[in-house]
Length: 165
Image (tube, rainbow, N blue to C red):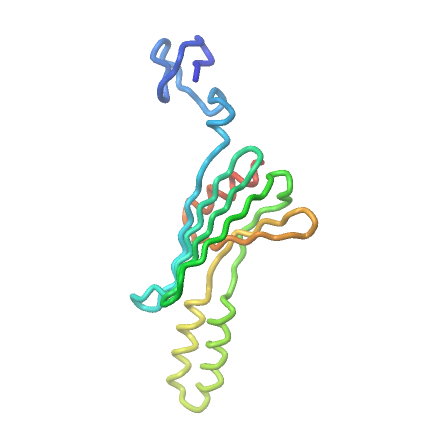
């Protein structure tokens, strides 16, 4: 990488020759555009983690590479990989979702709660566990790609990066 002002080779954030700060504009395109994001979404009931989704998203100029590992309690981990060309992504957004099974259990607890009111607490726990967020990418030809996400800076940075392209 070379300084935009004097042309000297730069190793770090400042030019050792003239002292100019090196910005993202002076970085080579490949260094500036490729970034890896790591998202972890854990579903817990008390101190027991019953589902963990670890997603690694590598974003470059031309491709989004998604590697997702889902680990459920008492089950074998599941791995999926997907590559999406950047030109196929039309829109990226974050949406709130409810887990199907947690919502179903909550409805069962609500129905049972009319006979034993303490079961309403079970419904509240199920609804709490089932609430979450996901990143949704709308693709060409009506396709969608969804990535479980949390409310952290890594999720926001990934959305910003995908929307810039």
